[in-house]
Image 1 (tube, one colour):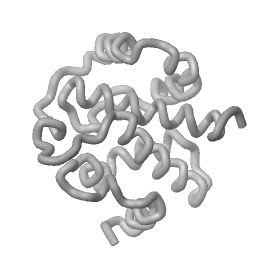
Image 2 (cartoon, helix red, strand yellow):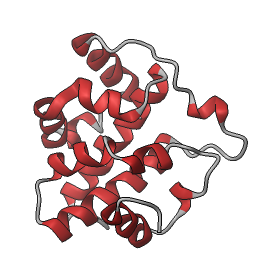
Image 3 (cartoon, helix red, strand yellow):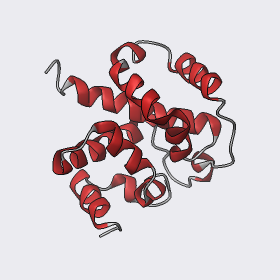
Length: 151
């Protein structure tokens, strides 16, 4: 433990925030970014998150966009938002808590859970900033994810 949170949880927070940041920059759903990067690259980013976190996020994003040929999509949940827009750090926190909780419950590897979460129904709900889903408490989100639907 170094600081208020375990280092690996902080690394997961960065990875989730980076996914959101890239998705916003490219107007793609989060699952598009996760799937384009793939498990191996996500593991690499997770392993080196403390280094990437010190770098300029626009530089990291640009390098990943070039490396994986991620193109601009037409998903713009920021423009569609009628209320306060959560930052990519806000959404990183929501996703990292959910992934961490599921890892604990299911005793699974972080990146495997991350990929599953971003490819599940809950990602679409969390990324609808006109709903209240991303404001819900972590235990509710985890229970809903496990149930396969909002509770």
